[in-house]
Length: 231
Image (cartoon, one colour):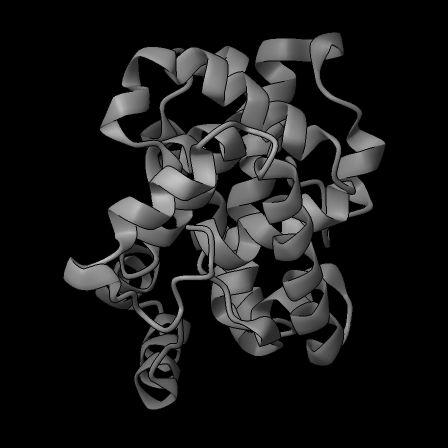
């Protein structure tokens, strides 16, 4: 997802002048992407207890405070800077609610510029479940989700993260490269390899990919050119 550079520069200039409308607009235009990121990375033990809107509200307060310094010296693309602030707030709220029961922060830190919660296999499996299961599998959803989680858990954490960034946060290779501190070429290669590895593991789930392919095929079996991508 890309931003109109001229429009963004204009909004940032207005925000530099402390124009409240510009400050609010800059945040609002990215709120859907941020909410999607939060929903993917929120600890499953806090589902129903921690509202994504609460995280966004806390993130907005921190963003408004930090914005004047950012516009003086922007050291990251605006959305990724905003995402980092939001992710840190989510991480802090995890710590507040879970304390010592949090997942290993060292693994999360190794994947991001900052302490953003990693996308868990539970969250990714739930996303994949809705995209790959057919109506005939509805009565087996819990079993299928568990099998998908097992497949994801067998993968390298960085491979899971690349899939999460590309498919569910809808980042392009440039954004992924910045977040993971790798080259754009490496981000592209890593994604292709991760997708291939996930497909191989999901083949062990009886009928999962076959049913998904059939439901995604058009009349007469025609399929879109990019249908090889899982989600």
